[in-house]
Amino acid sequence: MAEEDVLHDRVKMVNECMEAAIQETNPDKSINKFLEAAGKGIKATRLQIYKVNEDGTFSCLYEWDSDPSLRVFDLMQNIHRDDYYPSAWWDNFYVRQLNVIDSTEPYKNSDPAAYDKLVPLSRTDF
Image 1 (cartoon, rainbow, N blue to C red):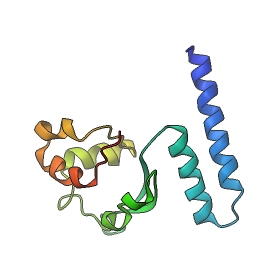
Image 2 (cartoon, helix red, strand yellow):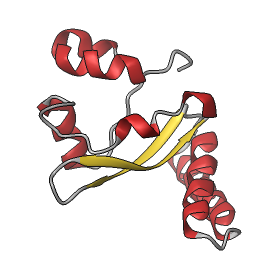
Image 3 (cartoon, rainbow, N blue to C red):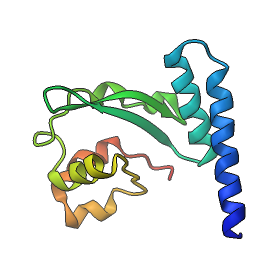
C-alpha cells in the first residue's frame, strides 16, 4: 500500500471516530464513542486514556475494551510510578504519552518487575 493510501486510511479512520463522537452531547459518552471507534478501527483489544494526578500518581480516565467483561479500569487508579510500574514502562508512557503493548513477553527478561505487573492486565487475544 502506498504511503498516500495509508495516510488516507488514517485520516478516514479519524474522521469516523470524530463522527461517532460528535453524535453524543455528553462529553464522557463522546470520548467513549471515540475510543470505541478507534479501537475497532485499529483492531485493538483495549484503549485507555490516563491522566497524571496532582500527587504524581496516574489514573485511567477512560477505557474501551473489545470485551467489556475484561475491563481493568478500577485497577488502574491512583497508580504510583514507583509502586506499580517500573521506571522503564513509566518513562516510555510519560515521555511519549503512549504505550502500545502488543505482548508482555519482551518485558519478561528486560524488565521483570514490569512483566509481573502487566501480565495480570494482559489479554490473550492479540
